[in-house]
Length: 109
Image (cartoon, one colour):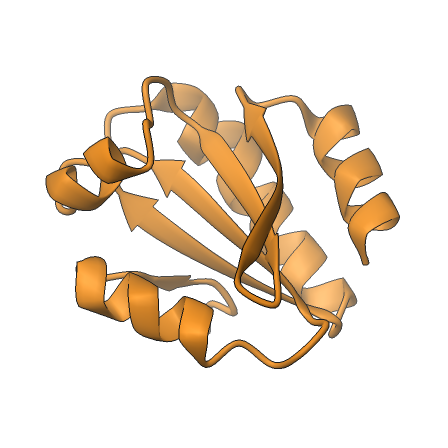
């Protein structure tokens, strides 16, 4: 069973932000089914981190399924990750950079 769930639309995204537990890190990973680095690097990394760190929640947004949401968030490359706490975006990472991802998670937890 996956610990990382997919956001289905803009309303789901907004509810996820609104209902996030206080001070818990939320990572939104914008991805696409055709994106090689999304599948080979970020998908397994997100699952691994989600299973090891209970202080965070990771969700994915398929940019092809949620085009309006991706456009509203200025997503121009995959993967792009947004890091939120208390509904506020703290940082953004573009590309499948494992070391930078892990560093940001460590800093923002």
